[in-house]
Image (cartoon, one colour):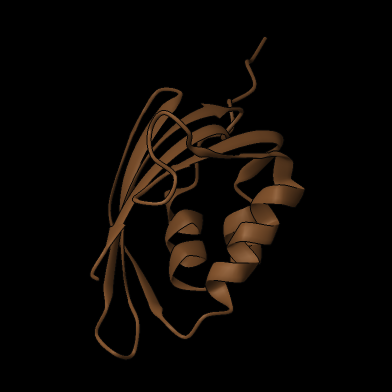
Length: 120
């Protein structure tokens, strides 16, 4: 009797999504995912919290409709946890750095805390 392999988090899809399109990135989120964003405007005691793929899709579409580049710098996966760094740059040279910690279920993101900072 064999055992079914558990689906793993696809880091290449993460890279393609971050460096490509919001739809590819969105495919990595579970339907019931929760995303917390902490930055200068939404500080740790009052983070922006997005519930579900629809709200996450809205944010991703906003970000990916901007003229800027995105690059996955590094990603570490251990069991049902992953961490990754992303760097972005606008045409005028303004840079953004984002760090994420995620919890996974069946290879999909179910919980993410994203901390971001940008040039001002």
